[in-house]
Amino acid sequence: MGERTQERDEEFQHFVTGRWPRLMRTAFLLTGEQHAAEDLVQSTLEQVYVAWRRVGSADEPEAYVRRVMINAHARKHRRRLREFLAPKDDSGLVHEVADTGDRIAQADDRNALLKALAQLPPRQREAVVLRYWEDLTETQTAEAMGCSVGAVKSNAAKGIAKLRAIPGLAETVTYGGRMR
Image 1: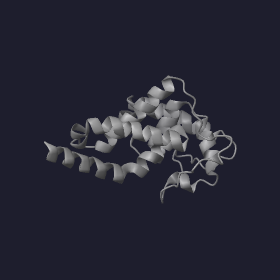
Image 2: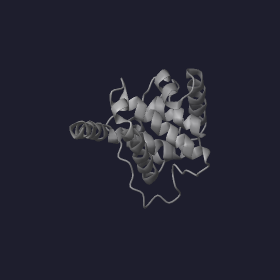
Image 3: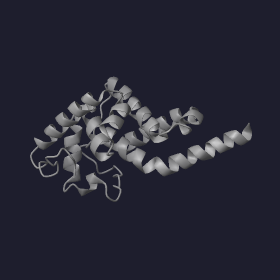
Image 4: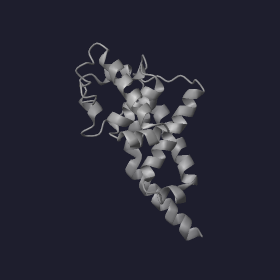
């Protein structure tokens, strides 16, 4: 029994090590704060670890973990805890370092984009983040958000339209609905 536990722990550790940057990026885009993102990822991984034998043997363990994270974030928001994607004074924050090829890293004014993203309602923000930054399909996004593909399309379209309407961001959001 101890050998199986050790094997499970090693598998989980390997998963976390490989996925940590991507999980942190998604959490940061959802919460807007480095510490809140770390808390969200940690609490998600705590939940997943308990069920790792089932999760690790799933076809797409990363999709399962992402769904747990989206649900945890949604529960927090339902409790009406305030989130700030771009605090007024961010001098004390450790800023996320974008991955090479990350679309958000290509934005001319990243802070303006994060502030604009913070203005979106949570479901629109989730749809935009998962669809365009995580580059998930509509079906994968719907599964992660626990809604229909139509709801993803609607929330993403409304979110992109709101981002386009913000002065100075029109160049960042292309007309094809894709973030540069």
